[in-house]
Image (cartoon, rainbow, N blue to C red; front, side, top):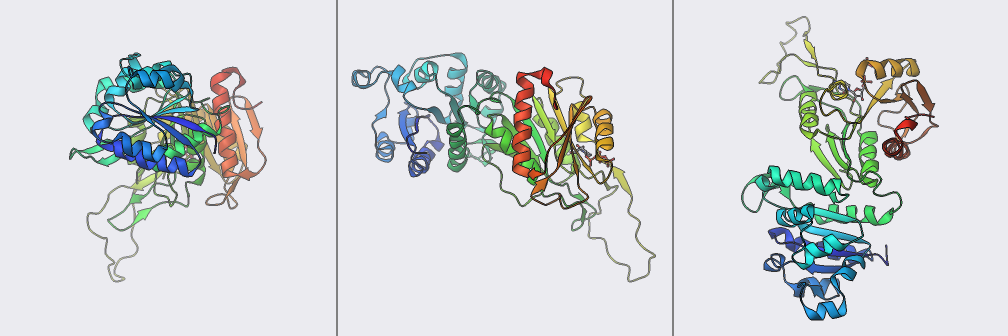
Length: 408
Ligand code: CTP
């Protein structure tokens, strides 16, 4: 990626030191970083260490005449291909959301004509506060890409979402945004929820019912949507896969947990249900391990009850229904007939149907029928990443040209 340049705004927070690692990762990839350090940021990391790693002077003061002589704040804000705020504090986000410009960082953010990425870091309650939520929604509506913070133990001793995303994740997101300026941003400002993987339905502490879903297709779709700039929440059952770059993952085990995590993620603009949700769960979950009776019983009867249909519950919402709801249909026969029936029964806008009678589950390829109201489109056999990319492009297309529907 040599030749690319970012403007890195380092805000005030304990995570400011992680910007050093970010600059190092960028430099290794040939991406130059020019740094603006806020007054609060300078309490946590020194201009000297930032400057040594970036190989450039660090800009700090809006009214410093030398800065203005060398490079005005307007030019500074436009001399990069991308503006990155990391850590993005609640204060910096509030300023940017409201168009304040009372220091170098906020002025650069208001003056820039380049895409902006924010990697938030703050206390869990600050992140969850209605004011911050409003500001994040406003920034996203203005086209700023705001990453979801990581979850975990915080420096202040509390636990929850609010930690700065790991530098590697920020780096991947920067690369994605630098790579495809033409395509990138088509879904920026849109929120997507993708379910993926199997669910596990426990019988007792050591046994569960599940299926062969690998999660590959769902993860690939989450990644493809993120690459187009969407803010993606991946609600995933247990899989062996790494979380794709730029995606926020919520890990769950059971269908009930998946259902709850999806509801918590709403409202969203796009919902894609790829998970192979277990249709049933054991009616009871034994607290201790179920024991054999030494041949003295004539088999064990397991009572199953139905799980909620997550896709249907999203598609039939009266309030806050995502504008586009996409379901998957795994079929072993009469694919088209079943897919059409599923479209109506579940109330979704599109059904992506595949024939799982062969080696699709866990395999690398997929053969797809895209079914929407009154239309069916057959895609040639292709890799799961290609299916994901094509679907993500279709989704982006539907937002810009809703008349086009799913399939021509
Ligand atoms: N799905 C869901 N919640 C469930 C079951 C399925 O959200 N409890 C979603 C899947 O993620 C997928 C779609 O519904 O997008 C279809 O799943 P599939 O297993 O093919 O359909 P079923 O509803 O199980 O119908 P059938 O078993 O009759 O084919």
